[in-house]
Length: 474
Image (cartoon, rainbow, N blue to C red; front, side, top):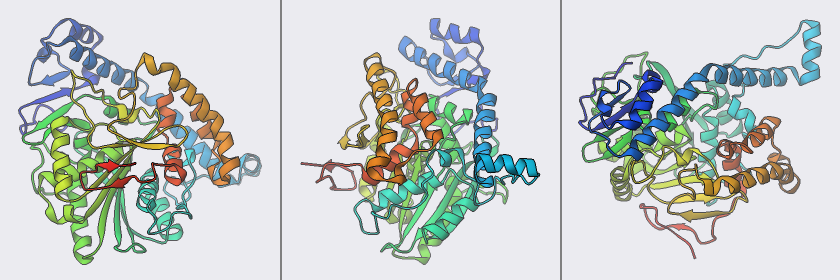
C-alpha cells in the first residue's frame, strides 16, 4: 500500500479498506456512529446517519465477498480464455483432439496477434461497420465503441487490427503504473485516423476484465477524496489514472519503468498534436475505462491544459460508473462548455455498472450530463439519468428478468434478421443465461453497446446544440 495514511493533499475524504475489515467491526459499524475508530475506515467526519453507515456496510461486505472469490474467478476466467484460444489455434474441437493425439497440439501465445481476450470472445467482431463510413453522423461513436472494445486485447492484437483491418496508424500501447496497487494495471492505447478530416487521435482506456475481482471491487467501492474547488472524486479511479500521494501536481518525475497514465498520455498527446495542427482528440472507454476517460479530461481541466482541451472533440463512454459528486459534475459541465467538448455517455438497458457506486440522498456519487439510453429493443432516447438509477430495486426485479429472458431469445433472432455479423458466440449465450439471475452483468457486455452503435435508433432530430451537451429532440 503505497499511499495509505499519507494523503496530505485533501482534508476531506472517506477511504474504505475492505480487506482490513473483520466481521465484528462490520457489525459494530451499524450500531455506532464513531466510525473513525474502525481500522478499515479513514474518514474526516462522523457518519451519524444510519443510512450512510448501512451503505458503507453493504459496500465493504460486497467487496469482501468478491475478494474471497478472486482466485476462483481468475482461475475460471483465464481457463475459459485459454481454452477458447486453444480451440481457435487448432482449428476447432475435433482438430484439437486430432492434434493432441498426433503430438502436434498448438499452444496459443497470450502475446500473439491471434490471442483473443475473454471480452473479445464474447463479441468477436473487430471490423468497423461498413455501413458507417467517415462523415456519417454515427462514425465517431462507432469508432469510439470499437476502440473501447479493442482496448481489452494485447498489444500485438490491437496493432494488427488497427493497421491491417482499419487501415489506421497505431500510435502506441501503454501499461501504466498504479501506485496504490504497486503494479502496472492501467492499460490504454492510441491510434490516428488519417481518413477523417480533420484527423482524429483516439485514446482508449481498458475497462474491467470480467474475472478481475479487484476491478469489480473498485466499481462498488464508496471511497473518495475531495479536491478543493472541484468536488469529491472516486478514489480507485483516480489512483488508476496516476494519482500521487500529494494529489495532482502539474508535473512529476517518472522513471523509465514506472509511468503514470495521466502524465504520460498528456505529454504524448502534446507531442502528436503539436505536429498536426488540425487533428482533433477523442477519449473513450468502457466500464472502468469509461471512468478513466472522463477523469483524464477532468484532470486536464484541473490543470487548465487549454492546448489539449481546445483540441478535444469529445469524450465517448460506454457503461460508465459514477465518478464524482454533484459539485464535481458542475465543475465538469462548466469546463466542457467553456472548451466546446462533447460528452456522450451511453447506457444500455439494465447494465449494472452505470448504476454504481450507489447514489441516493445520503451519499454523493452523481452522473452529470445527459444519458443516451438504449432499451432491450435498441431504441434510444436522451434522458437526464438512466431508469432505475441504483439497480437494486424490488420494483424492477421482475421487469429486469423479463428483459434478460427477451435478450436471450433475441440473440437467436437478430442474426436471422440482420445477418451473420450479429450471431452471438456460445460464451455470450452463456452470459445471457447468467443474466437471467443477474441481468446487470449480461447487459454490461459490449455486444449490446456494439449493436446499439450499429443499428440502434435515437429520435431523428437529436442534435448536440452546444458543448454543454443539451440534447434536443422533437
